[in-house]
Image 1: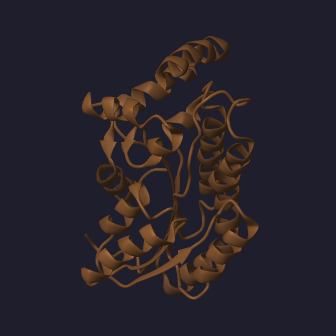
Image 2 (image 1 turned 30 degrees about the horizontal axis):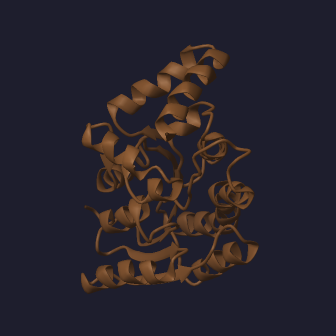
Length: 266
């Protein structure tokens, strides 16, 4: 792969799509990796460094203002030209039964961190791109869940709708600037995501049935799509699934999705 990017900052890189994105970038790309779990993040960085990669890390909880500031502060020392806003998590279950802190932290990590970090980094990224004559890039990891309301996954789906719309709007605002913006919308992916939702077994069954993708595939597709399109829904099945809520009446879709999600979470 051509070393298009010189310095990449990836949030949520201690596992899953974030880690896969780091591995998919060419060896010449210097990496700044963020994660909440310092030990796991250090393990990923060590493996990449053994391959001859230049890797720096920042361990921070993006649900907090201090954590978001720590992530931004670490990035100031690197001339970032690729920003991947990947950090995120979901909580499956009725909104009124989910842990209230988890619900608000979900909004902070999935939405506020993306806004805060991009607002802090993009001005300098664009200035460097103009000065060098090279384009910079930004990938916002949304989800196929962001295309419609999902009962029993209400807050998560809403945060991913935010990410999707934010990235699309930003791409239009910056259409005349030297930057490529991509909203990445994977479906079920082989990551640790469903462990945190408490529904790992259902996700494993979907993967075994051929209804999901590897994190490596999602990362490769995203990097290939950046600069070629603004929204990437990974996989033909997922693309078809995103059409249904756009064609069906919203209330009918919500009712059908509620039945399916309630059954799935059990």
